[in-house]
Length: 360
Image (cartoon, rainbow, N blue to C red; front, top):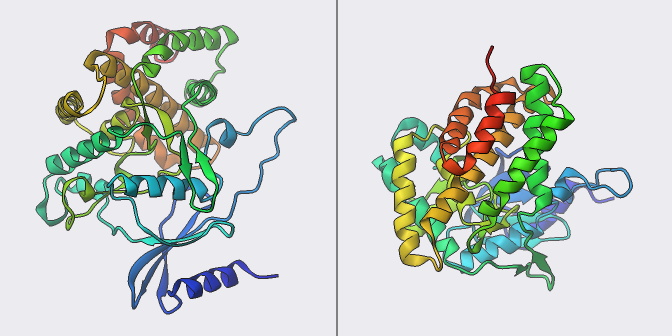
């Protein structure tokens, strides 16, 4: 039987990169593995992504990956990547692909991630953070200027059907704080009555998320997945990675993901300044844009996202023995309170104050 390493060597040989020096590259919490290649042709990144095995679930039920529409192989990545580059955005060029084997060789966008620049207070070559933030907002406007693509070609004669941010994802994410924050942080289980009331409130808020034109959103548009490309210009200064789980849904999703970064502090002043910039650009460049509608969707999605993270951090602590993620809790709580200031979220704030954040 051919080993995985033999498959990789044969793939690199056929792509003309067999002479490159290979080194591990930090990856993420998935079945994907990455290597950086350096050779006569320059630098590239090898993505090693064998198809994930099916997770056994009871008959008639779905796994979380299925409910959340998470990619299980490299085909969605290829389809979305080709779409982004075709739209003039700085996703990595794919040099070679073996979709059946789950192997991709792509452009190396470098190491200038937004995260370290935010920590340092300044970007590469002295670029201001404001310039980097403005460029990212312009990138989202450029992405959203295109009609939402329901079907994307993979390049092998098949298509990737881009999933919607549907009720299955929505309800699964809403349950995360109920299932983990309550038992781990509050020391008790949420009652059936509390759960039902919580979901009823969100049922009333859901129309604000669905309001307005739909767009392709990248889902994880935040500091770990955005790279500053100093030698480029315009929106091509903003390198994009980790977009295989992209969905169709609200224009506000990627904006709130970026301006309420789960892992980096975004001061209120910067968030509001960038929101104003987005609104200005959107009024000029996006069809059927309504600021009031957008800000309501932004606050609602921001609250939903913050609550999911408020449940995720304790889950990582308790289930996965990763206590360091709890350091993000104060920031996440602050983002939640920012969103709850929107008048439309008053019923949610009342419920949270009564059940989750009640003090003796």
